[in-house]
Amino acid sequence: MDMITFSAALAIMLAAATLHGVIGFGQAVLAAPLLFLLNPEFIPAPILICGIVMSLMNSWRYRSELQLPALANTWAGYLPGSLMGGWMLAIADQQIMSWLLVGVVGIALLVSMTRITIPFNRYTLSAFSVSAGVMGTVSSISGPPLALVWQHQPVNSIRGNLGATFASCNLIALMVLAWHDKLNLHLITLGLSLAPAAILGNWLGSKLAPHVSHHHMRMAMLAVCFISCSMVLFC
Image (cartoon, rainbow, N blue to C red; front, side, top):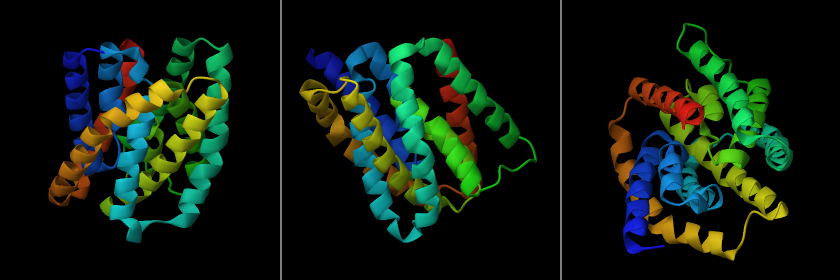
């Protein structure tokens, strides 16, 4: 990979990590399509590695806000979803599968833009986590389904719990990719090479986060969900 391409990748990761540091997710949504255009090898394993680094930073920063029962329900849904995603990668047309998943997330997004509130309980957490698991393994973008469930919770609770969720769930997705022979030393090295930009961007985002209200954070979360759906459909 030439230096210009790698420098562009670092700049993309820096911007995406800053967004992630502010709202608790969005790194993959912003970075994945741009990094794919630079070099398809960036997706999904390297970006999942960077996601683990940033998510660990967020979960540690907001560790007092962690809700272990909610995290347990998320993991209970994400693991089978991730396994399902790995299986689908092997047998299904990825574009058709992505459209189906976007349809599910799109319906939830439309509901969120009305006065109807998606309930926050173990059933919705588990159900949306299955969708997140499939999306994360297939495309490295797992944030939108989980963000829609968490959107009405306190801002620091969103950041901390999404951080703990993505750190563990991205690790699950990497293990599934390894099981299907889609992870190797080269891809791991590629992901680690982007980690410094991810760390710096997350730190910058943490400095901006206290200035973002709950309303603006929720609007940003919904906007990122909409953008992610649009990119999957039209890219």
